[in-house]
Image (cartoon, rainbow, N blue to C red; front, side):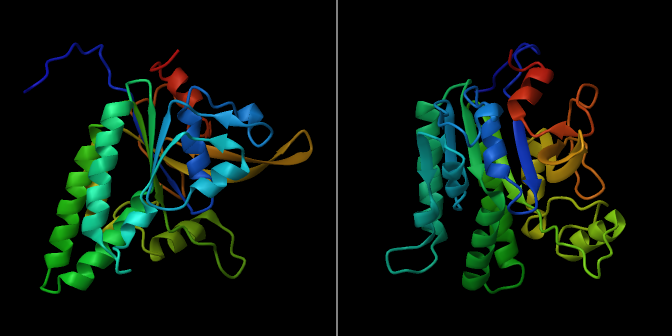
Length: 274
């Protein structure tokens, strides 16, 4: 049945973090937790008891190394293969349904739910459909329908949602380190060319399903800056995108073009948590 709400009753925000592989998205997704302290990162153990992590790829190792413990990891990496060792999308779909059910039963509006990653799920689903459906556009249509289902399921989860995706942002060649060159390379490597700079792209524009459901899309980069004469490497979010990758935000008035990669700090800034 339809729900009628007061405009004050904002749902918790939904974030999508994307950037080059290995930039630290899984760790920064954890920064949405009320129990995450960036000062303690890698120095002492942190138990994120409000956090649920649905893993379609192995991002958990990066958390272990930084002493982050997530008590509820729904590891779906073993559900990509059937008992006879073949890639099995139906098995993954069943596991996803179980994951959604588990989260609905155990999470609440103060929880953080991380999905890692959209790209791994898309790559797997698309290759499965292409193998099993050879008629023109059949695999494409199946993939779009699959993503529609998953995007709706994700959007209905309780709590703050953080979805992770990888952009194929490749390194420049010939020592030509200009930003324009980098962004041209990024587009050439398979990111959609509709917008410049590069935008997140999934197979056959399936990303549009997620982009409609998710309000905050932050491109993420690791940058080295000179601070007090020292080279310091930090991670940053670009809520409005930058010249390498696109972003979008509903809070453009309060968020800077470049924000330190801390989701909890951003949630405080936009007024959804105290």
